[in-house]
Image 1 (tube, rainbow, N blue to C red):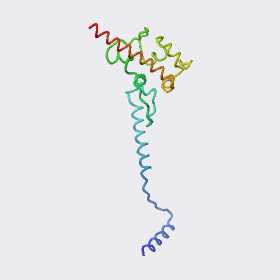
Image 2: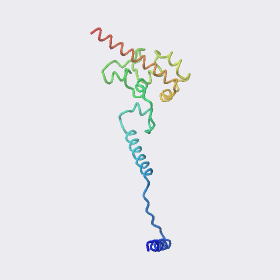
Image 3: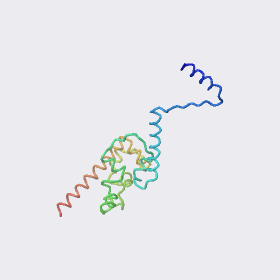
Image 4: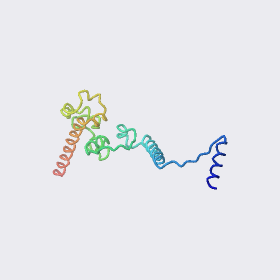
Length: 168
């Protein structure tokens, strides 16, 4: 009796102008839909945020790709840490560079500061003034040079703090 009823309903359905078909999306489809929505919302918040603009310059698009963290490189990515501009903004210290430039920020440190000419010559491409920060960060050889600069910066900062403590 059940098969006959099913056959009759199937035959009746073929005579209709429209076919109704109800399907339930599979779990993978639902997961991908949710993932796309979350990424779109995250991108919208990231694009419109007033915070993290130093990082936004390097990473304007959000994604789920993992980035290997590095103590020294992260300071350059974020503009935080030993950079005098950051030290000035958060701790009231002088913003000028040891070379005499009035602002030691990420751009000055990487491209212009004469203190690091030898490291730039050794690790950066010859036309590094035309490079962007992200190209240097994502190039293994250049990243090693950036790391060297930041290591020296940290050592200099720690030495000056030790000297301040000794004099106090």
